Length: 232
Figure 1 (cartoon, one colour):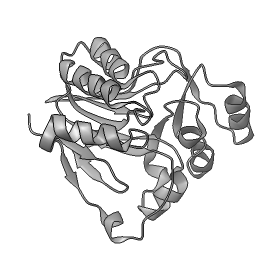
Figure 2 (cartoon, rainbow, N blue to C red):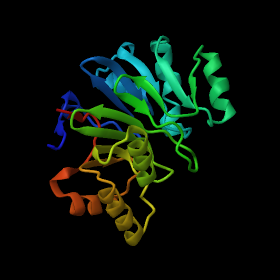
Figure 3 (cartoon, rainbow, N blue to C red):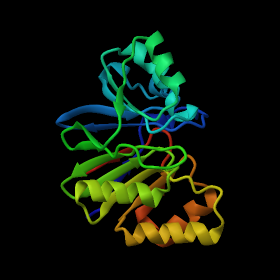
Figure 4 (tube, rainbow, N blue to C red):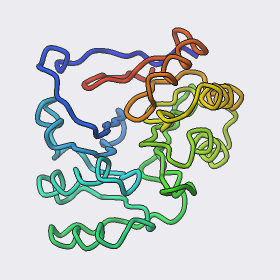
């Protein structure tokens, strides 16, 4: 399978935004947009993404750089369906009541729309959910921070979807504090799981990104703000 194609968007011609958060929007020709939300309102405005077009918001875990943006975005589109892990701390559910949000509590793997799924909670500190997209050429897995371990997130996606490989893995891999030996082991584990291409961002770390580049060559990239990835 060919590597997913990355394209610059109009954002590449804008002054850079600085934020430690991580979010992305997924859209299929036959399905509405889903979004993992961090500090998303500011990014949406800069990228001309209309919150009214977001039908589903999947929150990977309870850390503020992934959670808090939903409280800013939701009032702009109160019809969007929001998915929180059931294990999120109580304040997350109290805060949503203030703005009239009633998130679905995710306890198990679920379908978001046809061809797009949540892994449900993958056990870790904290637990986390990944977004899984089925394409004609294999699975695409989107992670938030991969606190449970990025290999564990991929294993869950493959097991749940009955897949033996992942076409494309995108997101934060939470390897920034790993020594070279541990990071190398994790890169090799992903290769053993059949991950064909990767695009690392957020909390992955500079050293692991170099290791991914060495192991995957042209099938490794660093995701950046405003990047549009086309899944042929």
